[in-house]
Length: 192
Image (cartoon, rainbow, N blue to C red; front, side, top):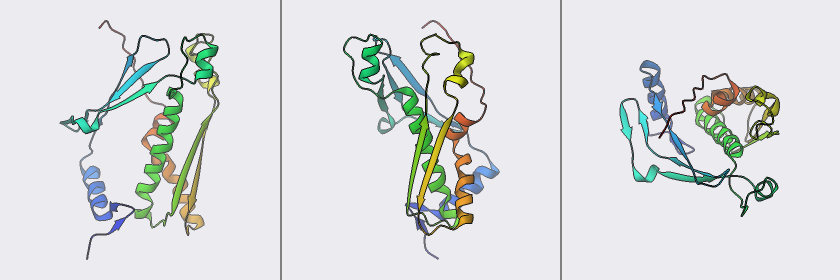
């Protein structure tokens, strides 16, 4: 029996990996660092090294730099000198939900016999920025962003039962879980 590759993935290796982490769970240590650029509302985020269990991985090809800010219209409205367009952090979080949902569904569809031909995820949220500007307190976060909606569009010869499986797979996305379920978030402030 040859290697069974579906959508760029060796299904035998996937099943071996699933069995291995079921037997001995693996923890991924992930980190992102935000550096303020000296201009209100702008920062640069660096993503790179990570850990797989006790193994620390730090290779140059994994170093990513992402400039964050806002849209020029918003920057101008709030008084930024030299407004520019940048990726806005909430948009990037929504993008991370969309990317992770794509991965969760596309990774698990072949092992569930789902013949995906295409997949598109849209994630939407209406945001009231009052908390960011200290007009409202942190307890208002949920009322300022009361709902995040996702829309999953799939194409292929997919049965109703397979559609239900795809609906179930949405909930296996780690980023969807980070946003959708209660998580313990600890903030520590200290001098540099």
